[in-house]
Length: 595
Image (cartoon, rainbow, N blue to C red; front, side, top):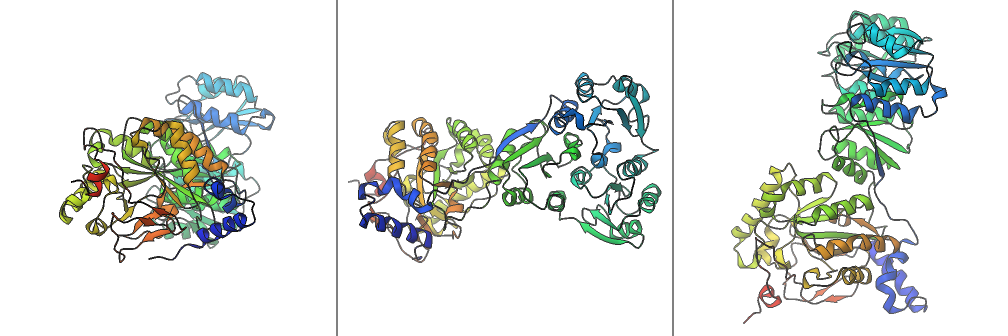
């Protein structure tokens, strides 16, 4: 048996002291202990979210401009870049005196939304990025509307990058950054680096074009820094470009880690905002204008509807920004990915020092599950969902959405049987089939499971997963009202509690907004099971954070459960079945005591 965790002992001692002093009546312990444990500390929740996006890439460039240059008096120039083939604008992040707006290729008419933005900011001049094939003279003249015009361009993207660098840093920078000459996100996120321009190496990353070498010589920086790993900018190319100057690299194992390192270099301190852009090679254009954003870094993740990349989630968790902003519309990064970014931005929660409660939901995905996910997105809190494999055959998209939005997925077997009725091999098959269904949805296999009906035996603890039970069961399957479910949870949770509900029960899902509000008012932070109990091991039987029976401890489901806080619960059971999958069972049938 594991020793009680320090956080629970501290909370219990505080409550006991208040009770002995006559300050806190015994009947109030269930509703006041959360406040006592954290002494008024605010609950940890996800960041606010928003988008900088228009109806298309042209509108998105305008949205970024409108945010960054809300005060049009700051604008001296407007830069035009081609929006369908945008290699000439890859290094435009160095330009700080005005927005980069996008135009269509083929010398098409300038989009009306772009014309309106130029009229709003009233620049002194309009500048084309690239040659005639990128932005033709007719487009430049139309956009300028009688204003002065100019062009930063050359025969190719390498010469254009050199021209932009010379224009942005006429006195010479301290640093020159090198990016791959292909259209890669490394160049886009580099726009946030304000101490030097970006020049391009060859598309294979192995050599330095003459235009880039000449630009380094003309700019004469103190150091040259490669962006990305040796595959995108080789050591030989870095040495050739540096020409004897100090050389270094900002690069991770992939573009997502590189973006994180660039963010740390550009914004070493915490910023109120973090921007997230599509980084898997599609819709990079939505972030093309992001170099003008001066109040936070740009991170990358894959899309259009993937869970936030590990490196990006880690950076969000370290920075804990007040707001996470998607660059581009849902076609680039879907709303669920943005919700997942918000959850990641909560940062790590130490439940040994913070009063935490884990909300868990069984038997889904169900018809009410999307409503429940909307509630959690609004409240900025995560939960743990124990899913039924057979239900994912129909509603797997809901389970994938659940995972993308930052929630924890647990295994609730494939057919929802009473596990003690099966052999060890039969129980393992139930777990393995659900794990396979999760892998088919691109969801990593979970290390947690909950036995249907809360019925288990020794074999259940040999299935390779922690067995998650509960210490707070409102028995939502027994017909209580929404208000009764909410009241039960409020009056019975303790620091470290695991609450069991069902996302197939509409009244229970309807109670969740109030439950979360109550928990926050009581000083609790809502977490996943794996955040609540960080050292979960296969075979653990987990009732709450501080009551964990490890695999060496034999436990019968027929025995009362003595919790570490002194409470004694009768044998646990959960009568709910799964419509179309498994029938409900009576208490006697679950416990095996029926005649």
